[in-house]
Length: 365
Ligand SMILES: *Cc1c(COP(=O)(O)O)cnc(C)c1O
Image (cartoon, rainbow, N blue to C red; front, top):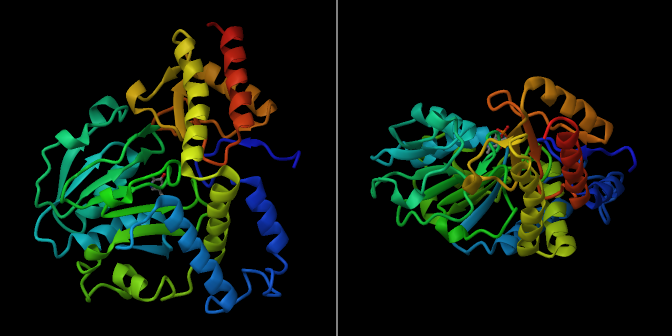
């Protein structure tokens, strides 16, 4: 335990210690199975139980209505960038609308262009993706195939704070880096998906929540793996699913329910953690400069710059001595990025906050 650092990695990212401990205990023999999750059939009773429990815990955490299906897929969030237009755009007859708020929604747009007509409903490039539009006021075609957003832009550190109401146009949301960080009204979305390795588990599994009526859009000519309907009809067991990822995801859902006490509590904790860092930025008289416009700030990825690159290097070196690790920002934004997902303990954020205050006091502010 004492070897563990405060891990601010954007992903794969910090996991809850009780989850890691449980996985460690179960690794020689899952209770009742006599072997580990890595060694048993995905058709076994033991795995069936793990899959069913992961689904029911997720359904209960998010209050997912009965007319939505939960899938556990491979290929990361990026495969969804292609599967979404393959299934929902090819046969739609109208364009899909993309809201380009940062690196990830831009990547999704580029993939969608290969599949069918797309419209850019909004693009934040001009201000280097530091803000978000009011979605309700965008000129979205009411007949659009779907509207696409990323709820949290992991690289830029900007986040939609509420669930948009897009009326009858199906809203598709990449929630990879803020999945399960707060309660969400799933009925606002046609589909919401997240790779697990930011906020919900190890790399290798992507969770898809999709509304029943959208499944009919996938054409039979699609390759089997790329058709959502095939996975629904086979309960995510068409091919061998990412069994370990599903197992760890189930443990994380259990941790959220039983140790944290649900998503309302998780949300309160996440707001508290983010506020601690943004307060330091705001009080630093310009020493720290946040990338995001204040009203668009992410609770998950806190992005900021220091007065110059020399100080940024010094900041990283001194932070590492306090076990504050992986704070370097993405090259497209520069500066620092503190990723403070669900599993980042309050103590880690407190240590970073204290260090930031001390560093600015000692270095100019
Ligand atoms: C990390 C990330 C992705 C990419 O996920 P992969 O599983 O590597 O494909 C996509 N969208 C967002 C918002 C992310 O944070």
